[in-house]
Length: 446
Figure 1 (cartoon, helix red, strand yellow):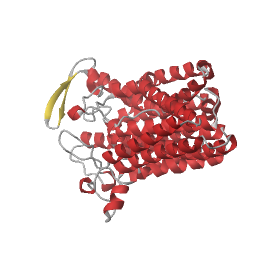
Figure 2 (cartoon, helix red, strand yellow):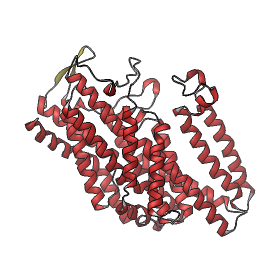
Figure 3 (tube, helix red, strand yellow):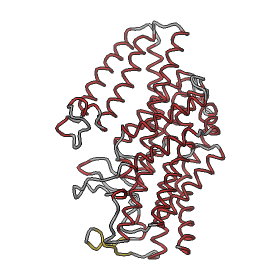
Figure 4 (cartoon, helix red, strand yellow):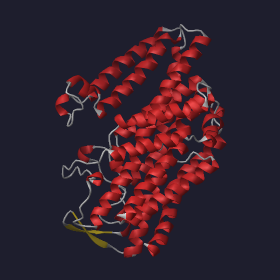
């Protein structure tokens, strides 16, 4: 139980570090464009980090918890993974490198699990009892590398997370590029951009309506009123936010051509508050869930390694199992603590990375800030819906690059960008190796 408590404490410390390490993701553009002062920006971002507690579910947490088979590992594996993630996060923060807190956690967890398999079984096969059935695995199969999606759904596993190292910034870059082109055309006195905008508004309303979960299918309605229960269902809130973001930008596009330069800049600065808030929500919802997943995995491992143990209600965690129709259970204090920790971390700021994100990649104006943050927020909501833990750092960096490309290719400082990509590529393997070494050291003493 002592190791379990230490893991929970360290996981929350990691969440706090994640907050100030990734604060720049949400506030760099609003600080660079002087919409908010640095202090106002971190308060703004921290508030929406915490507000995400009422918006997002636990899909990403479930994916992280199942990075390694919880029946095959012990608590030392998770402890080593969290320590390695904290070390890498602090190092990259000190160097001002906007690396991924998400990927260092996944890499640490996976690396420590592989080290455990080698330490316990060498490079040979081993057997384990899983759900009452004896299962034989190769040593490397201790990590869930790839799992096909149920009924043709989105697959999961570490390979999918690695794929999104490339896909998340590409999606962010493409989205911000298209949003920038949309805004640029909307500024012209032409009827075609307005027709496109109205068509997009109608399509958005239809699509979001089709995604709504009706009252009859809500498992635990939050209110007696059908309307408020539907409106505040976690699944529905995300889609309402998507609609609100797109419809707000659309409304601005309809008026853009009638505004003078001063009016347009003032309106864009107000819209930056909305876009940065939307991105901060996505940041809180995406990154806090990873720590929830680690805590849930630690409890599951403790139960597996101590059969028949009676868990207190505050640690009564059950990992969901779609194949058996088992719904996940997570005590309310875990998500509350995780969202509070990341919000507190964001309040602490991360000024070194703010400079890199806000000015070194490309020069950012209010126009670019709105496009980049809107694209980043929509990308995070999309990946969270698919239960894929992605890097908010990669996403917003890709979005900023996409905005820079609308001006000219040379507007992006590719030397800085290539350095960032190297940091992204190396994060998972370095975290995995570091976690493996830490596991071997800890195994000598624990």
